[in-house]
Image 1 (cartoon, rainbow, N blue to C red):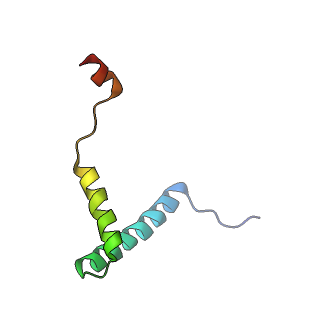
Image 2: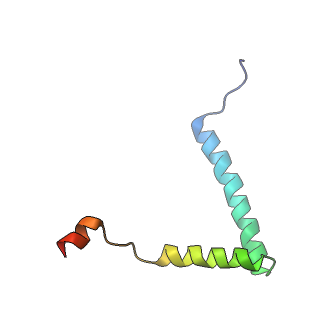
Image 3: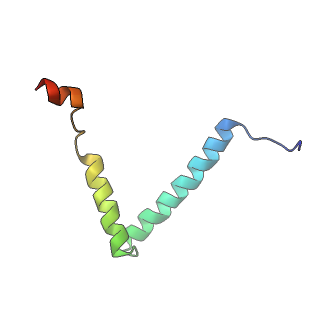
Length: 64
């Protein structure tokens, strides 16, 4: 088993390229209105959660 081995950096670059292409396809489908309504709801919920400020840590709430 002496095949060629790709570096860790190359593996991450390849994975990033595939992920970016998938996101581009999803965004094009979303802009064209081709996404399933349930998937659109999931994406909106994820976007909303990303914009929400982080909850205070347990220690911060105990001190208040």
